[in-house]
Image (cartoon, rainbow, N blue to C red; front, side):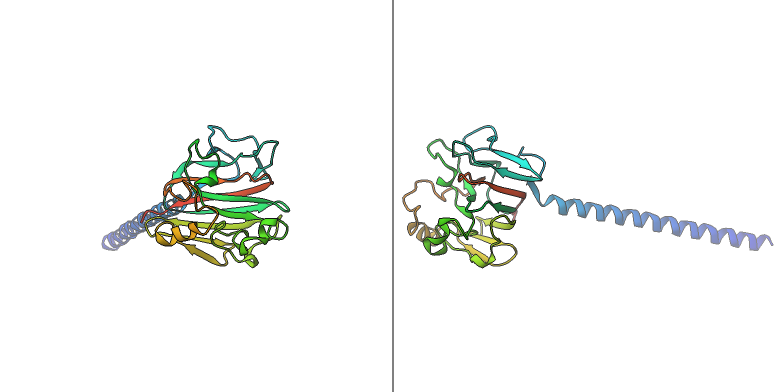
Length: 249
């Protein structure tokens, strides 16, 4: 009887020990999973999450211009009496992937810049920063000149983007811009459809610029590190879900 009791106690202790190990292993696995999730989330940094403009300021200004406000989770530019109220990210970037959504007003025009160099001799952000066009392709005059290189999604005045991939005024368009100075390659994808690509420096870039309106501009496209910019083109425009991921390799 004593022997049977000892055997039962021994079995109970072994079972408890295995249960404790299993619980500990589950806890470790949960901690590892949690750590991975946090790492993945931290790859993207929100420049605008719908609640704050703290990552932005006016070009050549320490403050955000009052024409830029938050409405229904979107950053909205409403033109005022004076133009030139472009805004830039407070931080500068070199190699990155930028993702955002934009919505243009009827017959409206705006733009997304990168590589913006802030200097008083450059009165506008577009004097240094290349631009991805934001446009109402159906009604804005820019859409019908330049053989398509002024249409929405285009590298403005340099490379056109297919008009059929762009949603009309009043609807949200997603733009993903990848800039990799190390690889000398940039890509633009609109609405998860066509991707256009182009060099960022060197002979091919210089040829493109030489055949554009920017050929004699002192600082255009010359700065590999610079601010992200959003344009005041005297038309209402909205942006949301603005996030950026630095390319480390």
